[in-house]
Each structure stands twice: as C-alpha cells, then as structure tokens.
Figure 1 (cartoon, rainbow, N blue to C red):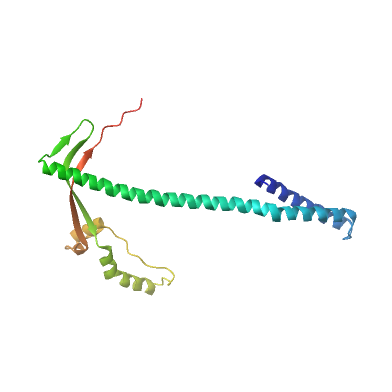
Figure 2: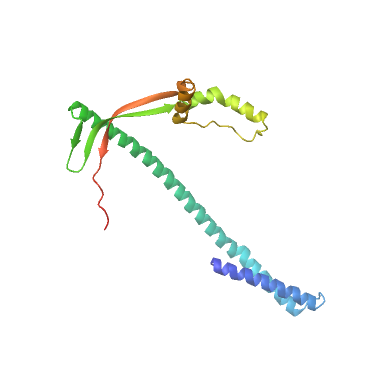
Length: 196
C-alpha cells in the first residue's frame, strides 16, 4: 500500500460515510439492504486504513526517523573529524614554524607552497571565573525582576568585548583575559585557476 492508496481510501471513507448518512436520512433512519451494504463497505475501508494503512504510515515514519538519526550521527562524526583535522593543521603549522626557526629561515618558498614564520597570538577569557563572579547576582536580579524559575540565566561575553570595556573603564575586567601565543607559520597555497 502506498500513500496514494491511503489517500484514495480516505476519500472513499468520506464518500461512503456521506452516502450512508444520506441513505439513513432518506429512509427515516431505517436499516435497509443499501445501508447494510454501505456499512459493510465502511467497515472494510476502516479495517484497511487501521491495518495496512497504519502500518504503511508507520513504516514511512520509522524510515524518516531513522534517516534523521543517520544524518545526526554523520553530522556528529563530521564535526569530530573537523576538530581532529583542525588540531592536526595547528600541529603541522607549529612543526613548520619550528623547522623555519631551527634553520634560521624567515620564509621558505617551494614550487607550490610558501611558508613564513608567524607568532600566533590569541586573547581568551576565563568564562568559569566570569560565571563564578557574576552568575549568581545576575540570576538573583533576574528573579527579582520576575523571571520564572523554569528559565535559566546565562552570561554571554567574549574577549573582545571585555578588552574594549577594560580600555574604556580603567582596566576593569582585564583580569579575566589571558593571551596565548604559539610559534607557528603563515601558509600560502597555490592560487586556484580562474574559470573561463
């Protein structure tokens, strides 16, 4: 049975129900051979929909739920691989940076790739310390303002916002910031060919 068959059966169910209703109205509510035949047709269509029809729809739904689960698993696996590849990229860049420094070269250019020494600097903030210092107070203030208990409060910021605030407010907040550096390299890839 297909969805098209199910749709046809539903249409037949509605049409037969209407015919049966009209027949009873016409006959003053009496049971006749016609109403008995319509009742039998209605019962057969209902059995078909409740049996094979429901199973068909159930199989379709299950297959779509399985398909969704597969996509979610693939997405999670792809995200894990991306994280792994990102770590490998960082590792290779650091290794190239170490080679450049060990050989005393600022830049190296091969036939296809070029590398130059680079010190990567990244400013990060301590999210745990921000939460420790302000989350309880923010939650209390939100509750006092009427925020119900079924809604949680979270703090959102980033290193740039904290640094900008610290510059404008006598270094306030700069204690949440730290700088990470790594001796890495800049990587120049071959240019991609322009399409005609």
